[in-house]
Length: 459
Image (tube, rainbow, N blue to C red; front, side, top):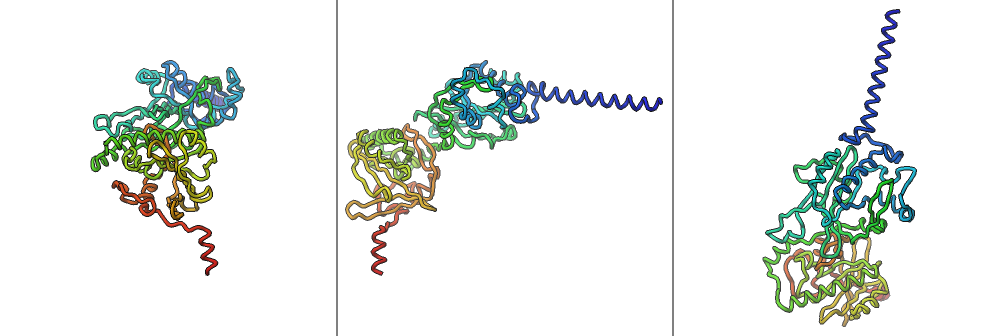
């Protein structure tokens, strides 16, 4: 009997210890860990807002930045996508109350916010407060690309990204800068050698792989999941911008090296031409943007941007490219209304269309329309006197943003291949005598369908 009692007591003690241990684990998981701990266990879905890890971390972060007057706004694509579905309801709702945590509890490893650089400068106090709240943080900064061409200033670094980590969730803050082309820019996230590459899953960050360019935002204050945040007033437009926001910086160092070999033309004629060409490019961009027509720097204008970060003074024109699928019949009337009358029109919409508009003085605007085939893209040229047609072949390319003469404008992302197709391997050397029919290495004589038919009939 005495032996049985000992076994019962031992079993009861074991059971009591197990229950107590389970209670400790539960208490740590749901109470201590959100406040102090380095790691939450993952929580499913969007059940209870107050008990959800992601919601809790976002709430603490918003409280942190609010206490330091840091005006962040939400740019997380996943959360904005959910918000966009309910945007009308959220705009009309006063408190954004919901029976469940719908947005900030969505499964993800991080939540992304943005910060306009000029609106906040005092980061030391924020970091101290963050550490007291249990956050670990990482600051990523790099050289200001706008100063790369200046010896004395090229080493100056600017903050580009901040990451705050609490338990299993992270907050990614992207720093935006206003640029002279009246747009917002953010830099690439590049880790330095001493940084912890396991701090967060960096490859998953939505705004780190490439620099990006965006239009200036109008913000809308909303209340979602019982948290007050600011979001882009038009989330769908922002998400569309995000899908093609990649930015290419002008190659300032290479441009400076180019001018050391080939001193820039600073004559009055060159200065006057560049002034007129810049004004013409800005007017053309305004006109096409108002029409919603996508375009990019092409031919000599693209070469000038890529090689010397400026307009080539002896080019005598401004060259733009447009995909034929983006053609609109309103283009010619819109340019006429803008004070740029049509000078020449070659080809047809279905074949080799090219438009030329007269700018101020002898400066003209040439617009080349590009046609896409299975394995290449081409644009056409027509000789006015003889009617001969030429085709210029390019490898397929996509479009990126850049800044050129204080203008946010598209260029081919695969710029080097584009330039080499048009100007060959010796594109770095200035060529002042250029024959558009025979000089381009990608030029071939185009044979019309009627000529092919005649040849077939003769045979």
